Image 1 (cartoon, rainbow, N blue to C red):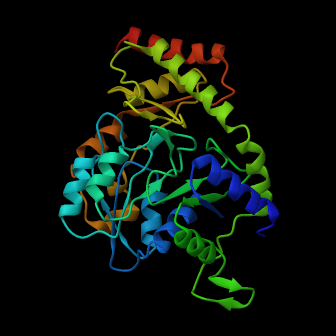
Image 2 (image 1 turned 60 degrees about the vertical axis):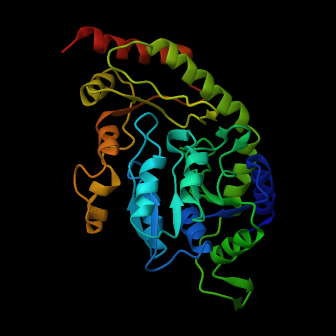
Length: 337
């Protein structure tokens, strides 16, 4: 545990993200939880985040002892809507704001940071390894950030792993302490911590894969641009937004259509592994029913949940296979109801 490869990966990943520090942890969920804990978020606090994301975003808030407060998403990108964030913050004090860089596209961080004011912003960058806003990479856009290295991510380990990035030495030191039972030495515990250390083996794997990340992300970007060309003007498809100044890591290529379920069935019948991220927004999940939200509370997030479809995208995807996906999509819309 915490062998030399851990420190080597942490230094390399921090440099790649453009932060002063990176702290390896056991998972992306642990990264979110420990980042919140390092910020001092705890019982009685509220954290504002988006309902259109994976459950871990809200789970981590609950793990920290706080309550998720949802704000609706932007219709074009699916990311946290700065105007909805402002309204959520006006409804009561919050201890942190957690935007999600959804599908690899950075959230509108300038507007989010302005709306947040003095409230610290924690980036959920689990899908955004290498994404940029201007010249700044995800992980360096807020006060602190959390990454997942689950095997399916752009930068994936051979098992579970995660990291927290920040340029604050105090926050980095606290995350490093919290991941290892609050220890300051082998048998001295400055505070109650957690067993959330990154495995040395996973750090060694991540060191190798990090060296290949820029090339892999470039391949994803090329394939995403090719999808844009192949699917332009097809049916009612809404292709991924490309906001000025924001460059996606293209973790997923997500389209929207009012015929999503029928199109998904059509693709699967042709052996094409499309999927849905995410079909049920968090405010309607049974796990978060106690928060008191109801259908219609976040209409844009609900629209995304009912219309989004992820098409196959990974660095090794061949153009012939991508053409087969595009032909199947076009055939569906040309056939009509």
